[in-house]
Image (tube, rainbow, N blue to C red; front, side, top):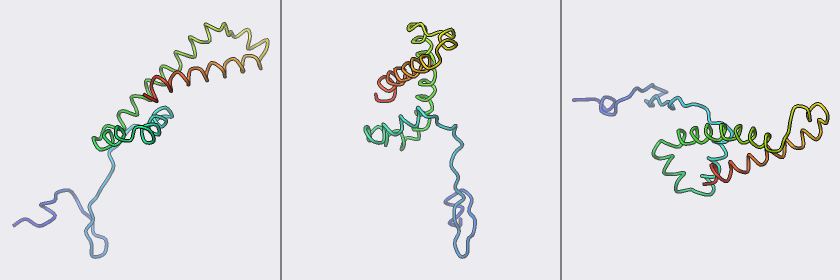
Length: 121
């Protein structure tokens, strides 16, 4: 006849009078800022989808995919908007404060587009 531990499978360790299972979380890649923002949106605004992804074991993969896509999209948008607005290194040399103001405006525009197209959908 099998013992209880053989039936349950896995490994156990003893602490005092108790046998506790050796549990560990699977190794996963870290989730960046865009993935964290997506997680917050899903958790607060789309709870059923968040729960489905979480219980299906697909949440972390989804967040990493969104983060990667958003990061790529952000740099492409910043480059495109910088070219459209005519912001150059020459402006940076001549008027640093104006260059910073315009670059901050472009970064904010890019973030807003990403929020609307990737994070909050």
